[in-house]
Length: 363
Image (cartoon, rainbow, N blue to C red; front, side, top):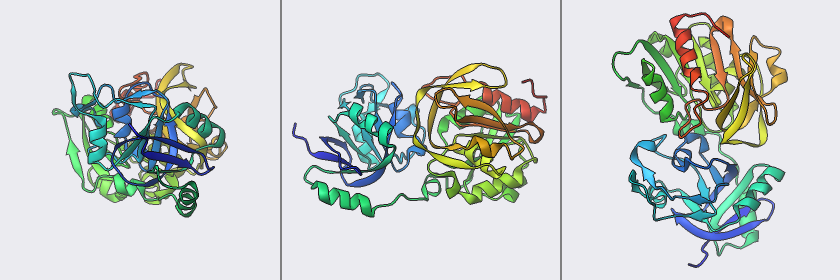
């Protein structure tokens, strides 16, 4: 095989490799993910919209793609960057290859590059713009393209559902309205599994519309980008505070915090992986969590709000959870619904159910 694709970073570093997936040139934000499994769930997570993801695990594609494991119907990840791509998977559940799926959704991939060096570069210099292009593109031209490009701020609008829809497993005890900012399928599955009828609404649905459904609880989903890019969602949540129990995950956690008056900031290289230790300050227990986010809540800004911090990341002490007991509102920065795992934090869905039952807080 002949190398035919190139990755160019803003600092002038370039990496030559082999193409798989779709053709085309892309300017994206480069990030890395440390998970050892779950590349299908990662590539179909809407939170990765417009991002080129470097996998630190060296072999990607070896178990193919299973029809039941997608987190969205239309993957919007920017690109995949891997050390070794396997286009001949061995798995009885596999229906097609990762490369074929990437082609179908217009997502480029590059393999054969030094992903360890790229990851160290991101850790040292932070997430930044990267160009996926043909190997013939001169470095000076690539740098000009990067300099002229800018990040988009409409990612949530592009990945949110366009129409309201409902999901139920039958015999539902509670009605949850879920605000879709780029929601993963397993979140809905987790709610339905616990006896919820879930009405999914677009990101910019007004509070009055949500109240018209008379929900027992409101959920705000994960999603891509900067939380301050969705002031409409922040306004909606602000107007719903105190109306019914509210639970937020990832971007939803940031939106809840902003609705209460806290602030957010961008991390140097974000948190992305399936092994982040988080401490529950209420119980002292440690959870191993799955994470995928670029932004975090400023802990100092929380002090001036009715919120209290409930969880912290043990690696860098960032805020991982907040709550307001009097309003029956809580949120976490990580993913308790994570597939393929870990499953340490699934109890948070049970806590949401308890809130909708009107049961007192135990911890």
